[in-house]
Length: 161
Image (cartoon, rainbow, N blue to C red):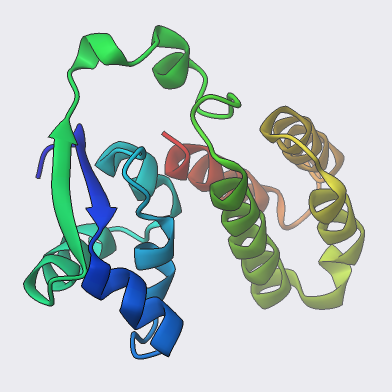
């Protein structure tokens, strides 16, 4: 699947959202498909392997259709060199990224992660979140969970590419 394809909701897709007949995770992606985001942008909030199956399902159900395909020259270089840039993430994608980060922190570290969770939830931009994650990684650098935190910070960054 090309990362440069852009999909939009069909009339059937918009009606399904309003009727509440689409289940998760399909609903979340159907709501994100807006005729302007490329597959590469949608992939920033997908789990590995999730997006291709989800898009295939949404197409088969007639909820989305391909509207265009961009080329690499249509993207600014900053989108690819700085995955936390404002241009690379829309507001709802950034919100979803923060939600996933918080869920994972709670799962791995429980209430010990509460100070970092609060900081992440208060981040208003991807740049603030990057600084927050780097600070957390530095704060825990010598502790017993240092490697787990380092891997978490790297994975969050990788998911934004």
